[in-house]
Amino acid sequence: MTLRTADGVIRKALAGFYFVRTGEGEEYMCRGRGILRREGLTPLVGDRVSISVQDEEEGVIDGLYPRANAFIRPPVANVDVFVCVIAAADPNPNPEILDRFLVTAEAADVPSVICVNKMDLNAAGPEKLRAVYGGHYPMVMTSAARGEGLDELKGLIAGKAAAFAGPSGVGKSSLIGTLTGRDAETGEISKRTGRGKHTTRHVEIYDTDFGARVFDTPGYTSFTVMTADDAHGLAECFPEIWAAAKGCRFDDCTHREEPGCTVRVAVESGKVARSRYNSYVRMFAELNERDKRT
Ligand SMILES: Nc1nc2c(ncn2[C@@H]2O[C@H](COP(=O)(O)OP(=O)(O)OP(=O)(O)O)[C@@H](O)[C@H]2O)c(=O)[nH]1
Ligand SMILES: [Mg+2]
Ligand SMILES: [Zn+2]
Image (cartoon, rainbow, N blue to C red; front, side):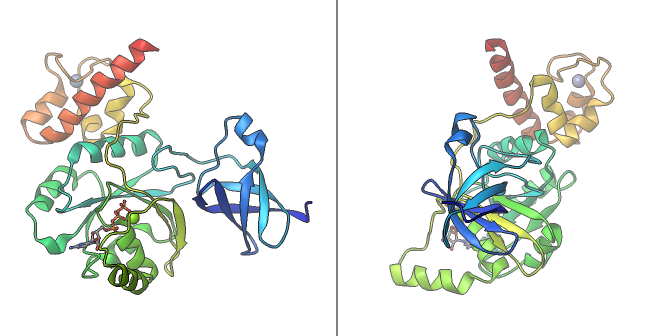
């Protein structure tokens, strides 16, 4: 039985249920209507949806409103900015995984902020990361453990729908805990169970008192999904490579073997970091293979 219909946003997805908050602030646990599945539409956290309310707690998702953007990993929609979290150490930074993620965000025209967490570990990695990414992406150095760098992070995401993404264990949930004031609670749980770690298994949106809605997402251990349109669109997804490519003599330069390629000159002079260029070349080869097959 349908009591009424309403519009809302999916705040959490868990075990086949979608938790939808309506404009009036009520929350309903919803299933998706069969028609969505048949049309190949998977509701995502962040989606704006129309629902039929069935009783005080439950409803059914009837349809999805058009999305500004949607991602497979992490499975989120309508993101204003990604906070790409990487740890100074423990786990050690993996630049290629970060580059793959940044390309995915660029391909969808969603800006990224790079957040280097666990600065309290005094590792050597962060200076290198700043040299590679600092001129091309907003960067913030944080310690969720010590509450450092959080005001700067807040400034970068205030008023936005900010999805936290990154490998498992880098501190996404810890950062979100301190941003939303839920840290004390998490600390108690970890003391009681004796576990230092609470791996996130679902996507959920949390409100903050500075106007940001933050998405916590499960960490990934590898990143193979490639969403750049094609090999030639790839250079566009590396801001500093794209800037260097403007000077190339040939419009169709792939920036690999071509003589006089200005991207390679920029790599030699250090304007483009070698690790970024290597990521580009590897991803180019992968996309080329994929395009050949299809
Ligand atoms: N030293 C230090 N440890 C931290 C910091 N932030 C988080 N940790 C610890 O790192 C571990 C992982 O933190 P989480 O917040 O669960 O990491 P996550 O990115 O949410 O991990 P997944 O949910 O598995 O993707 C926990 O033991 C935290 O206490 C930090 O700034 N410094
Ligand atoms: Mg987590
Ligand atoms: Zn070139």
